[in-house]
Length: 412
Image 1 (cartoon, rainbow, N blue to C red):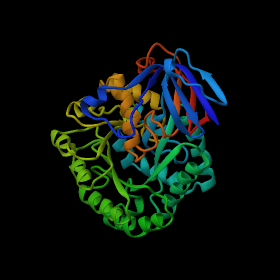
Image 2 (cartoon, one colour):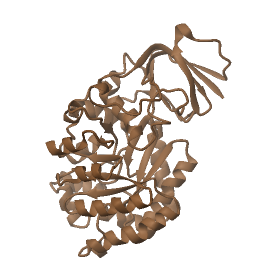
Image 3 (cartoon, rainbow, N blue to C red):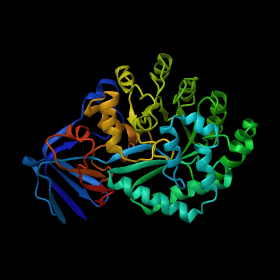
Image 4 (cartoon, rainbow, N blue to C red):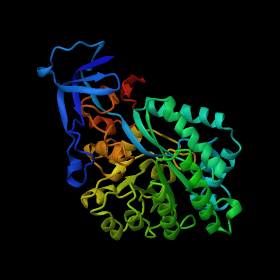
């Protein structure tokens, strides 16, 4: 089926396939065509251009986009979308003055979610996660990474990743999965973290790989969770199975995890709310993507990733939601883009680049997502009538999306 969108006020992020990410000053530029058209052929973008050069085309449907902006769907490279239940009581506890770390120390946080997930059936877990996935697709997400990490047993981690894989098969959205067994130390290993790391490396990892359930391997490198040495061991073990690393790092403390991530050739280092100059230097010249999670900072009232500093240092930056029950119970990438502009001082161009082309890079989807490019996935956001793309982060509380196409199929 061929669908033609015409009279597009602004067609954003039209790029050549050779561009896989943008960094530093490149992030200031958001290529666009005014008064444009785009042709979707089943699941891919076939062609695009300006209205003055629109050829005669045989199509099944023509959609008039007068006054509307079209851009690639959001690429959310960091979520924990598969989880059981919620943690609204902890939300109330934080309002009353408890910190994230205090809640975790008393058996809440990740361990709380793990307890719930372990007793939830795979079918129930899938139903809950599917509902969340459908919601984020409605909000413009066309590619998503889903991490495990709320299982903390071999059986439960596998259950999470099976659900994530099933979502990728049942829905048109592109789904990447990450094995995050090293998300927290379970209660039964409270005084034997080394034993749990060993379990991850010798039992969990081989079984997950044998079922082809993970695209990446991840670690929460942070005081009270997993050390730099633990991170090195787990990522090195993942490499033996051809799983590239990712790291949750520098959320509360800078302990050297970013340099280790670069050394381990991690695809991304995520969070970065606490950043030192040596971390910036470690990232320079690497192929590792820094990823900021501004809605996590908003929800926890912790510092925002210094995105301005990262970009001004000549580095790339991606944006993601961190959708999870404890620190970011939202998968709204529109809010993430707006918050990056409002609180991190990114320009609209930088924020949109970070949430599309750089987000695609951060989950290994540069060849298929993140830009308006011939042959890439026909995954598009069509806004309502707006004055310009700067209105997207400006009107942060409004639903500005008119239509969403995910892999050629209209979702909204």
